[in-house]
Length: 357
Ligand SMILES: Cc1ncc(COP(=O)(O)O)c(C=O)c1O
Image (cartoon, rainbow, N blue to C red; front, top):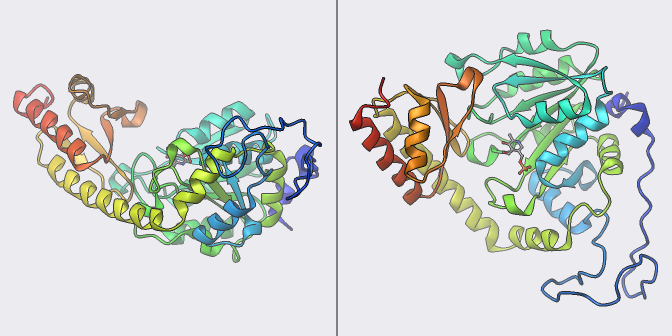
């Protein structure tokens, strides 16, 4: 059985939107477009609709992320992929998703929009928030359509062992799609689970250009999975989802020296992450810095509100979550200068003593 059979019946046999034909070298009077371009800033004229699905970009991303083109859909960031997956697989009021906790809040957000139930499995803070695979499996039921595993995990930075991912894939074969969100994988030593796509027909992998490649503003990512799933996601995604400026900007970014520069920047972020972690650990106000394989650090401080207020006062924004992480702040790794500014602000506060109680 193809895992695509678990898709909502309404979308399973959805025919893709039939767009006006786009044929090179023809006079295009079939799409109600303007005959002149309002801008000549791009290689492709802006008066024309972009390709329904950008074939060249799809090929480039498939090569980069290590899968056949037929197993990849280009999305508006991986956020769109999360939304599409939940809309395609979860019947309102019936189906559910399983997530680990704490993790990226968009899974819950889109589940709520779709009316899908959320089952959350807490990780152990003393074990890098890694969830127990038995707990994850116990949380799965007949209505669990999607299991979201974020590795490295946002906001904790930990990596889920490959053995846990594979155990879930095997145990949920033909019953749930296991989605591995690899938004931060470039900052880790892990290999992408995309290499397992041929082995596990219920595996879906999310990648994004927003983090290591530095293109959050372009809104571009990809979902990798079995052809049947990719075809349904594509039928549900808006036609012409990726605009011409975005397609061209990302094509340029992924060609030539852009990639080498990005790799160098990732190395710089990793070095800064390790430096910052070591320096933060020396502060009295800091009681724990979790090991991170991403471009951020989760830090437990004695008084999170005071730290947030003082850094805000110094013109620096950190992230403070509630609930189980109410005593923690998440710090994205900036440039060396930005990180130094943060350390200076925190050291002043540390001496002051206000944040140490
Ligand atoms: C784990 C994770 N997945 C997905 C995303 C979405 O990223 P984007 O939509 O920019 O690709 C984020 C963004 O912060 C994230 O942290």
